[in-house]
Length: 316
Image (cartoon, rainbow, N blue to C red; front, side, top):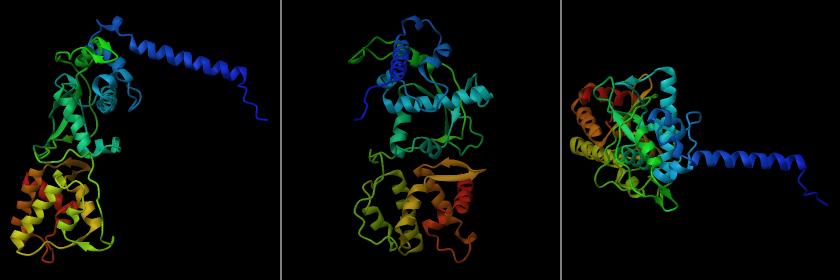
């Protein structure tokens, strides 16, 4: 017979752990005594500086779980920046990262979802945006958290149905670290789908297919990346007076993943917008005589790291 009786010591340990957790939760939920604290003193109670993405339940309820997770991660980098004395501008610490880097930190979200979360936090005033980039073409956003606004939100009367009213905007202070997050401008007709997924794929994996066939197999056909590829392909066919070369599906997929990024220097990645790709495409074909004679001018060549880097700086 299996003995299911819990040893007395084990039961006490579990009860003690449960008691500690209950006390911790109760302490976190009691905010009345902290209403007079300044934003800077309060920030540590709103966001945990020790771990990258622990999300407080109250904050998640008030701003949304996704938004709370992003705020926590940004707070982590701001704390690192403050400890190291990095990225101090205009009386505040800031953090920045390329969109690709943010996606690496939140791999469970698609790009459109992540962009939408950041935009939501900016519009509601929880994130303050700055631009301290060294190079004019770099539109990476620098962020700091509006801790005073978060404090006001956390102090708002709260019930099971939510908070009673939205607080007014306030000003605040805080930190940064990483590598820049450029401005991603989504086209008006872009879909709100969070991922670019594949639909039915009738072709064999190794077959070369035209862009039109590749695009038709995608569930999301109006993303900024698709529009950027489509612009290049149309420019190619208009200038070269011939169809764009067919490429293997895996090549199209790789281009789709990378078209809106460029490794500019020292492994620093910049994000590109649709307008950036248009300008780089024009420059690419205008400067065609300078490339090797056997170049086929396909988007695979245009998207190669070295060529893309040169185009990025020259077209800026």
